[in-house]
Amino acid sequence: ALAPPVTMTHTIGDLQRLLPDNRRGQFPPEEYRIRLPVQAGAAALLDDGAADVALVGPSFLEPRYSYHNVASNQLGRAVQLSWRPNTTGPYGILLEYLRSVEFRTQRPKVMVWHLLEINMASGPNVTDWNRFAMPAPQFRTELRRLVGG
Image (cartoon, rainbow, N blue to C red; front, side):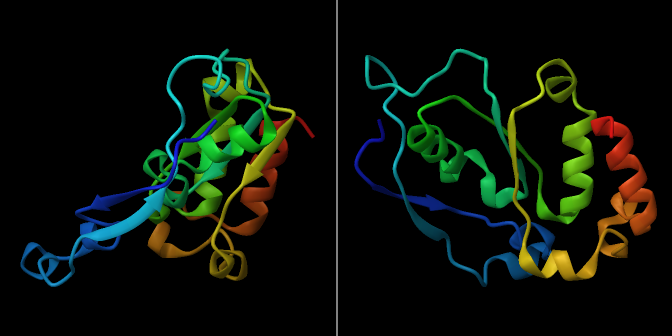
């Protein structure tokens, strides 16, 4: 079960981390509403370590937003979460998850890959993603290798 909504404040967002120190003060703290999971008792979310659903994506899935908790609550099963800052890029984030011990030892039945719509149009070779940028054929080859197809 999820608790009633509460208002949370986050003092620094993703974009602020990229600004010079003297510009960060120009942006006020962000407020957001969230429903936190019930932590104990019969109404607590499943937590048996056997998640067969995985959420993979950027900081929009960051635990402070409880997206994985809501997904777990709505699906009635444990949900594994793997996220990184969006500066990694969705393609790099996905490949990192597929290389992880969690994926290799317990493949999920369902994986939700969260990415921003604009990233779909740009492809995996955006230079802003630094070491995670790669040509599309390389991404597809690595994806096939990691999932065994």
